[in-house]
Image (tube, rainbow, N blue to C red; front, side, top):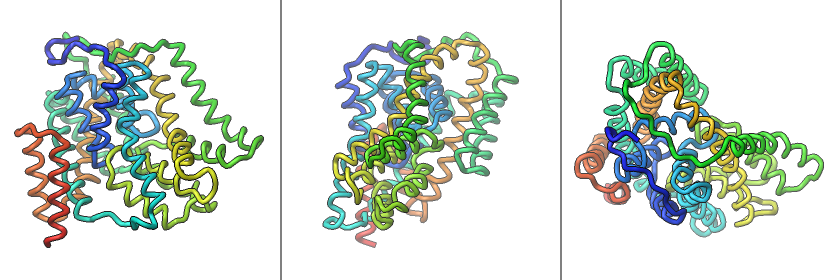
Length: 405
């Protein structure tokens, strides 16, 4: 590992310690997938120094290419590198269960609790996401875009992502950035690459990919042969987790089409759950737990929530286990390293575009919002305040402001 990047020598951790780290993030990471990547960078690159900015960007780039929730897949990859398969499960559980449990409880008690969430609190949580993403963009730019070509790639990537604000556009940006890097850029001279210590063989990778595609093709056939509600739910949610690029918001139309028209979930309940899902920490894919608990057919409740949650995240596990063994070996190629120089700049451009839309445009609606975001950014960047504290303070200020004004 390079001593120049300031990272510590990686040592194995217990799955329990990985779980506790990600549990804190699962309780405090508001703001959606882009903000989650900012929280992860602050925690694992800056604070704990588990890996360098370059290795983190490489992992983010890989997960951007894969279908499914990118932030959750990054977390699974980080857990896998620290404590093996048990660490990957622990990282996913810590980051996912808080919001999944909240949404399942809301589904079961919706009639009693109501269907709204305090707007002022939600506004404050959106504002702190602006500061978190801005901090991530600033820090990654200083490490990954240190010359004119890479700054140019990042700028054009941001423009392209804003012109084509969908999953296809993002994927196209990544492919073009990789091509430009491969043809026109060179790896940093003297760079000592830092690979995640993934103790997974290529055989395990092949088996994982085979299982991924077997389930994708086999579940519909199994459902035809053995019709059941459990298989139908598993099939629809597995397919949603397998075929969607672009994160949680993109998967929502698929879930709505799978659950509302056939009467599994009422449309009003779907919209209410979607509103609450915006205001809880953790990945938006945990909305599957709400839908499973809200089913008008059996299985429902906690059983339905568990089935849908596992089904929608299973593809992420299989893809990470299947692709990472090959990715780590490919990264040692000089040509791949050249492509990654471009991809890293492209990732920064995507983050920069996301900082404007949807993070900024949905949160900064008046001058006081900008003032609060500015103070949150200063607290994170210069006061070195822990992100969970900044989240708590900004959420409280937004809630109190709504009550007073």
